[in-house]
Image (cartoon, rainbow, N blue to C red; front, top):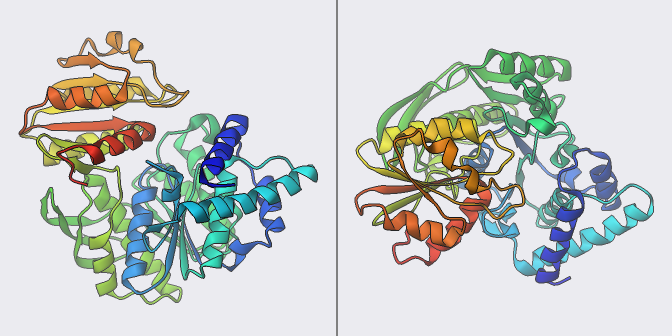
Length: 436
């Protein structure tokens, strides 16, 4: 297959299977491919929010220490290649097509043996494992797709560390309707002899993960709070110290915006404590340099100026809550126009209750997804807010509209589905005011 044919193949798989959690197909597929994942040094990251940022920080630190690092994340914003990188460079179109072509041959083989067709996520995951193996990376930073226990990435037998990021209610139809049930699914990545890192103030989540660690024989590096103390903070970044139950680390800095990024950074510092205790040797200098250099697109990211446009992939209640706190922190003196597009299977009424009070104006649009929330249903939900409301289904027009109704000294904040953020990222890149 060439690149275009590969994308058609993936779209066909998505239409056939969608989400279908389970490990039988991926085990058979990787066995057919001689199990390249068994030779990789993996740092496995699960959670509801913050996984991508944590993966970016961990990989940046490892690169600062001189390692060759593969990173596998999902979903992508603009193109599939973003999901598979080595030292920050995306897999090429030609390599992506070649590896997916090879995986497809193995898929056809196991289908003939009666195993069943692997899902789109399983197919791309298999390609990533083989790509990292062939390129002899030193470490792979591996983000869970959904949940953990039944996620295709959980075929990894002996990760170097399991990191469990913020857990909240999301994908409840697949993972359960309580934090305890969801934590149980996320805790499925915990393995015997592998340290586990957890930062949460929620006792239910802690108790579930702690019990799993005891059963598996995994040492738990746990702190109830981040212990982050801000030294300096503005829209260029944050300088801070961390003092919690696991680590004491001074004078760290991140350029990533968002109050939640301090929590993510503190957990990354905890993760390297766990890794260093288990044989890795990452210096404080490499840790500081890696944190400072870390980038993560589409999360509290400034993509345009005059007016300033911020993209944030907040797509559930916890994410919207953290976005609200960050906007109050950084932009309390600005008038905010929200551009919002949400999937219909989210708790969108509660999300609106959290974010609408901060918005002077709001433009509602529809993500490019069959699961999109019909903006025609918006009016009766938002009429109680003291906000100017605009409805525009077309994303391009909605983006232009949001900027046109916003003063040059004020800001446009785009949030909701990552499908929306990906489309807006393309538009921002083409704009005269682009900061990309």
